[in-house]
Image (cartoon, rainbow, N blue to C red; front, side):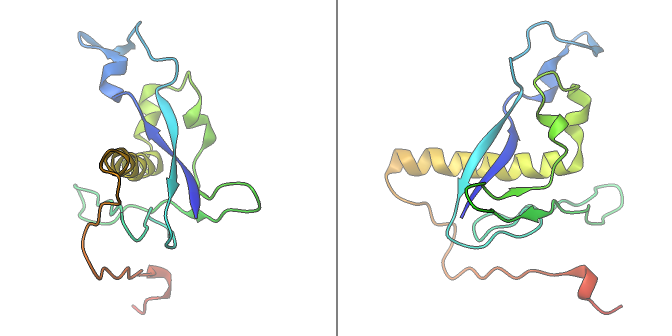
Length: 145
């Protein structure tokens, strides 16, 4: 299965002048975000979660899980994806809006896959995280309370 997942290609803090956190830097990239094509044999789930990478987003202040990004399966020739406000991919996006929970989750997921793809291409073989890994998905909506 193949996905298009957004990622931040320029650190959000760079988008601000160091002396004035309220002013956007004059030297911006043309586009601070990009899409990474993620290809994996296994299934993808809300999270983002795949057989190789799982993003578990915990609110540090409360110790609770943040709402996960919802997976949208591929249809026809359109890649699978995770739900996201597409305005976040605008080249003129407000840098503060890039702190959106779902964008950060997806960006982390895409960055890990982008890094894996880089090294796998360089090494000429897949990188295995571990052997006999089993993905278990907990669905809180079906859990008894």
